[in-house]
Image (tube, rainbow, N blue to C red; front, side, top):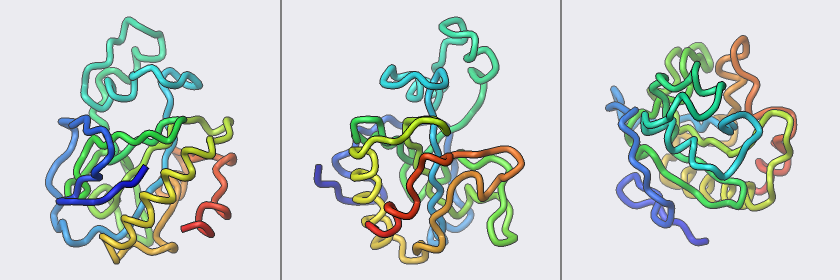
Length: 181
């Protein structure tokens, strides 16, 4: 699919506005791209539960795993589903709540200056080719739109919070992704 960024929104993506966002201290300072993975419950795909989590509508009674996460106030800018379809929850110029307690190059609170992209998946599941193609296309657009992001400033969540996070995990093919970008 052909995507385009217009007014900090990814045209062509399904828009699912999340209330879990806030103004950035400096919207012109977007300089980091963070790659994550998510599936709810873990290892289950294509069921709409990520939308529910990011929109504060997750029903804790539907799965035991949801008991501990239903009250979380989290979001990402984008989710790339297993088939490559993209959903946008937060405009790029706003702060999505994806990185939590985090640090990059000595700077805390990475949400303030980053864009977060979730890939539907797990640490121990290979990602689909369609996901890589969508991620590559979106990354190219983001590099053009936000020139302070470069290949050295595209990282996994594990880099920002190594004691807490391991995503996108060992199955994410960084070499092929960064070469294609």
